[in-house]
Length: 222
Image 1: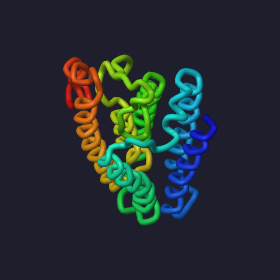
Image 2 (image 1 turned 180 degrees about the horizontal axis):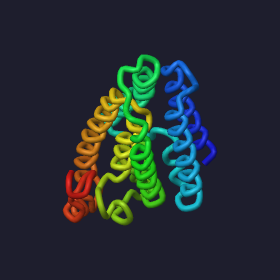
Image 3 (image 1 turned 90 degrees about the vertical axis):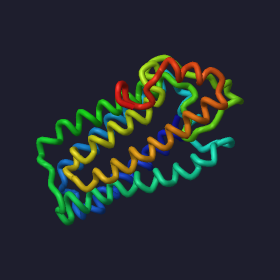
Image 4 (image 1 turned 60 degrees about the vertical axis):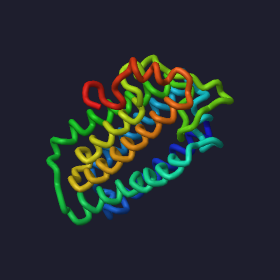
């Protein structure tokens, strides 16, 4: 738990640091609102995982042998856009002022961010096989998870992250950062398609689960 917590804290620190460095100032109230929400949701995340699914912290602490080759390509691409997002938002909303979204959009942005975090927490306490990368975890007795959010969509973790990314430009007031959101959504779309094919071919019971849970990411839409 401690190692995973340190990883998350360091990653969060880098992301937030890039946000303010790109802005060129600490005087950015909307960014501080986001940072506060991130600290709050991460704290809730840690408590829930420690209480209900502590083994997942160790499982998600590193990339493991057996990770699919295509995922080894996609994850660095995602990492690039993850770190590019705060840079683009800071340059846009503060340093150069290319765009400026109304302050009132902070509220729907915060709502989306919290809803995405809540869904991610639900996933983390439900799925004991949730790792950073896609692989068949034969040594852990990998089984299909069909309860909780997995009864609604097949990839609820990505759904939660996408909802959060939709809220970020509204919170920060940066229209240009929507490009980063779209890039991340595109990456998740590709990843879920690849993951679906892998699990259907290699994980017993996934084909039947796929027939019962029709929606990949968004109920009634996708």
